Image (tube, rainbow, N blue to C red; front, side):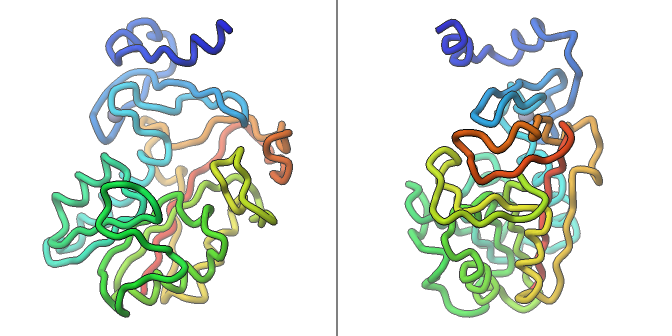
Length: 251
Ligand SMILES: [Zn+2]
């Protein structure tokens, strides 16, 4: 009971910082907060230094933001057309203010321009210059079909940024969606980027290791306790510090 109440209390950033001053200090690249990050308790155990208490970004958001901001720096995005799948609020503003044309899509999320199934997109070939879909492909039953569709609607030379949660050495396909993992159809592995390679001209991956530690780009969780009752098909991973991965696919 006490634990339940504790989990629900989310202190405002200044108070959280004051009460957790002895914890490791980080910096949020999105909102420029300096101080400790919140830990998370979830079905997979305790995860450390996860969330910026001011803007709510998690490890993956910081990693993706740093990598994508660097990519966009070298592009004339004001002339480009972008499609954003499952748009995260803070990335939505970041992209919408930069791209000449910005559109959003999702299977069922409210407030997007298009309700579409990634496995069968209603868009013409070579429609977009830039596609961003984070933590989407692990939910799609036929992810290879979705990857082919993303490639089809990209213009030649266009970019698709397609990160998934990397939670295994090698990808484990599930026979059905697991409701305890937000209906994931698979546990993507460090090998997941291999799925993109047959369909794109080039596939590059950036990981947490290429980013400054001050932004806390790693996933600190004990994955040796996997599999669990809720996640029976996950395999154990050694270590308590894991990398996040951003695949950059060029058409
Ligand atoms: Zn922040």
